[in-house]
Every structure is written in structure tokens, then in C-alpha cells.
Image (cartoon, rainbow, N blue to C red; front, side, top):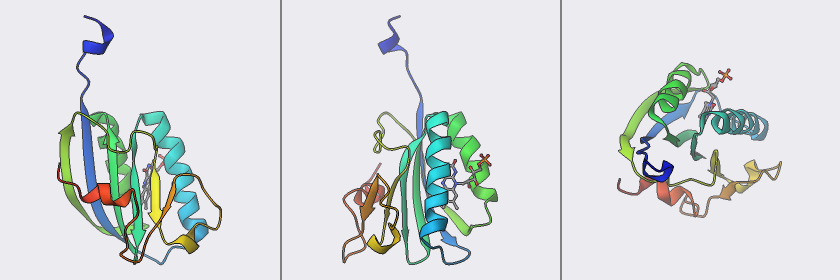
Length: 135
Ligand SMILES: Cc1cc2nc3c(=O)[nH]c(=O)nc-3n(C[C@H](O)[C@H](O)[C@H](O)COP(=O)(O)O)c2cc1C
């Protein structure tokens, strides 16, 4: 069978959670840096939205990689009230080009990190709108 025909399974998990403490630029930069490094190794892509102390994160990748990250996320004391919004098999990634895109308030991007999408007056960015798309 040609490589292009081998079925590859992908999964998407979207959850919301609440930050246990207000997070500043450095805290978010550290989460993102670590996430991007780790996700690239696990073949995970996705998007993190942080607004009003609430996270919405989408992670997409191979089911075993998603499960491994999910177990870590659920143990992370930096957030609580973790609620799954969607977990389903997918055929295409929504954030294929980002090991973790990040949308938040413009002032929280003091380090000018790549893959940052500032929120507009409606609390949305050009990437965060993809989070609430129907599967
Ligand atoms: C809101 C939030 C989002 C996170 N996103 C990721 C992520 O996408 N990838 C990741 O590896 N870690 C992420 N983390 C960190 C993990 O919860 C955990 O600390 C990390 O995976 C442990 O990595 P280690 O096994 O290298 O110590 C996130 C943490 C928080 C609070």
C-alpha cells in the first residue's frame, strides 16, 4: 500500500478551564514555550485562548499523544474546573501550522512571540473563531 493510503487516525480535544491564579506575560510565555517544544515532539498541533482568566484549548494529534498530554493537563495545578467541550476523531487538523497558536489580549504579548493572535473588542481573534466551529 502506498504510504499516502495508510489510514492515520487523528483526534481533536477541546476543553475549557479556569486559571487558579491570574497569569502574567511571563507565566503565559513559559506555558507556551514548554507546550510548543513538547507538542512538536508529540506531533500535536492546536490553539490556546486565554481571556478573563479562562482557558480554551484545542489539541489535535494521534490519539495516544492526545491522551498522554491530556493526563498531564488534568494534573496541572495552574488551572481547574477542566471541562471537555469536544473530543472526537478528525480527518483534518484545524491548526496544522501551529504547535500551539495563542490568542489573548495584546498587552500579554510583551515578548512578541510568533503565533500570537490578539483579541479584538469581541474577545475573538482570527484563529480563536476556529475553536467554536462545529466538528
Ligand atoms: C492552560 C495550559 C495549557 C497547556 N498546554 C500544554 C500543551 O499544549 N502542551 C504541553 O506539553 N504542555 C502544556 N501545558 C503544560 C502541561 O500541563 C504540563 O505541565 C506539561 O505537559 C508537563 O510537561 P513535562 O512532562 O515535560 O514536565 C499546559 C498547561 C496549562 C496550564
